[in-house]
Amino acid sequence: MAALALAGAIALSACTSPEPEWTPNPVETSSSALREQLLKVDGLSDPSQSRGYPDYTLEFAIDDPDRAEEATLEALDLFYASGVPEAITQDVADTYDAPARFQLSIIEAGSKGGGPHLDLPMPLDADKQALADAVATWSRMGQIEGVELQTSSFDAGAFEMTYAVDFEGLLAGVRPTSVTPQLHQILADSGYDPAASTIRGIITAPEAVNTVGGKEKYVQGTRFARIFLTLKPAAGPNYGSVLYFIPDDTIVDIYVLPQLAPDGTLLPLDLTAETARTAGQTIQTDNLNDAWKLRDIIVFTQDGMQTFPAGA
Image 1 (cartoon, rainbow, N blue to C red):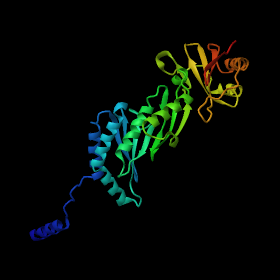
Image 2 (cartoon, rainbow, N blue to C red):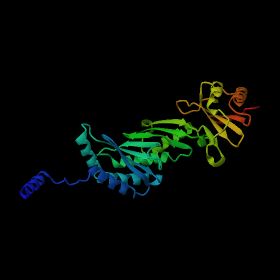
Image 3 (cartoon, rainbow, N blue to C red):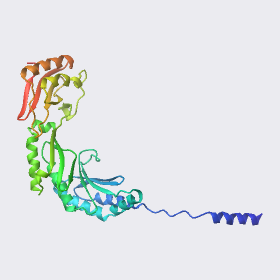
Image 4 (cartoon, rainbow, N blue to C red):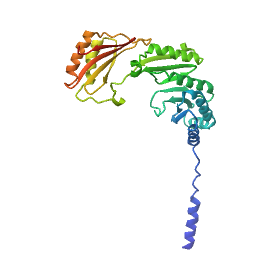
């Protein structure tokens, strides 16, 4: 019996192979080290990396527009020296027929990539200075007051971008026709041909605004969502959208935004004192309860604003 047990033990040990040694994933290792290095770059925040085979995207935000060029150059130097490009290239080659594609994305701080961003191709032989210059230029354009840059792209020395004049900008008199020339000037000052870039302006505003605390306010007993059914035909074919301003607990002002002409000019609306008064009476009856009073209908125009007393 002892001989049988010994023979069985010998046979079992012969069939048991040692476990393979664990080897670190070069993509994960290099990416993790790169992130730690990027966190130390002055003027840069929220670095992250994402993959969607065969694509790789390096994301970060620029905290200090004055350091946009320097921070981007430093980040690119770290990226190309990190081993990430080589690891990604090999990993994609082992899995796909298509080559790896690399992209740089400049995001808004705190947005986690969910807001507007600038996308730039970042090939292995990229001109790092050209990429840094583009990021710095986009950062300068984002400093124009009353303007929000939307998702944009840069390639071959040209931008394709959209910007929005927000509600505060409209109230301050900012109009897309004044913004586009400023963007063109920034492009020219940065050494780009403005004619090579595509720039489109839009206007945006929230549906409801409450000045108290700067927070939107829920209005009980109203049907704001249907007000446009009355205003749209009264405003005519250039009607764009409507928003509601609630200065206190009983007063409602309505702002009407027109559509834009191709050059960014705010198109005129058909509203007059008479049609605004008629529309206001219908809105007061059909969309607001007795505790609320519609005060004014304000129209944004190319030259400013026009106010029509809704109950006059």
